Image (tube, rainbow, N blue to C red):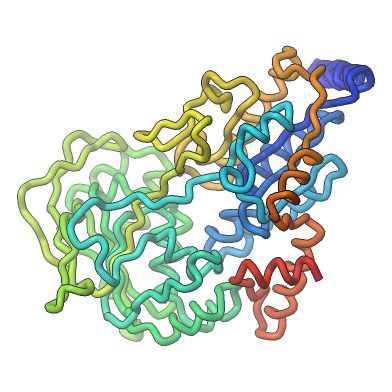
Length: 472
């Protein structure tokens, strides 16, 4: 039944294109997982459709390239699927095009039957506490971007001269950062971590990392895979506060299986906090703590410590809320990394945006009150979930768009010029776009440079150098 419906819809679009000279032209803003998954589903389900992907950087793949930890190469295998999508005969990639600056959303709407905004979350959520702007305080987004080769983060130069680092937040990104700070160099040398960050980590004095969360062990946000990697990290041992685990063992039998397995592993780590005598580095969780102030050094220029409010929980399970007790605790540290999440930003004044939730208001990906405009990924639902979550979310948006095509809501009888119109605008404005074939030149150069160092690749960090190689 579904196959018949798809066949009839394709025949309808084919017939329409033969009479109007145009079949659905869809533009996707953002070349990360959300953008590629949306394109993949559109191209898989509909024979008569064309998809163009616009990306701000000259290089595709977004957080798969820039967010996945260097020591998780298996997660990056999805790039193979994205490459197949980009090489589809009805798909084109335009890198180095900044929508909202080089081209407006309105201009995209005039050129395409549908526009999908999948540009992610590029801003940091701030702590909103005194001392947040001292030297030695970094967002996890920028820190991850530094070791993963995001061009705008290449000059970060984090100060790794202190013994202790504090990470605020207990999600997977927080554990990625902790692992990068404590991993043996022999492990990192075999990854695609950038050479400047590898050299900085080799000279790092950080030997202890505390991962702080406002709620308790039963609300910790990371997955069991990430926790297991911390527990098994060579040369390290856990450092926990036993009192923070009171009553946790008794609560195990009431927990859902995934949470139970995670908590059992956490308890095991806490009970084995003595660790190996050979371990030279430590990591540990601190629960029921919220940051209230970054304490400055004597010259008031950089971080010397952090003051934490001590919390108690009201309620239980996933819905438990952290409430300050009025007590505070001070920790000495020279490095603070804020890993409490990202925020999307408005792309264009013509696009609705909810500043409180930091998302585009939508219904199943359809942007509210704007026909033909859609969204997928983090800008649609907020910065949560893993890559598989983004895949399902993007497929939902693609299905909504296809339903609107079938319902005749996108006015396919109106002839659109698609990329022909946009490329003309880019040429007039002196914007040098990068095709997928040209990205493959950049890719080949990175792989070649990495091979010389025994790594999967050595990422290029300078946009101008990328463009020069792409155009050679």
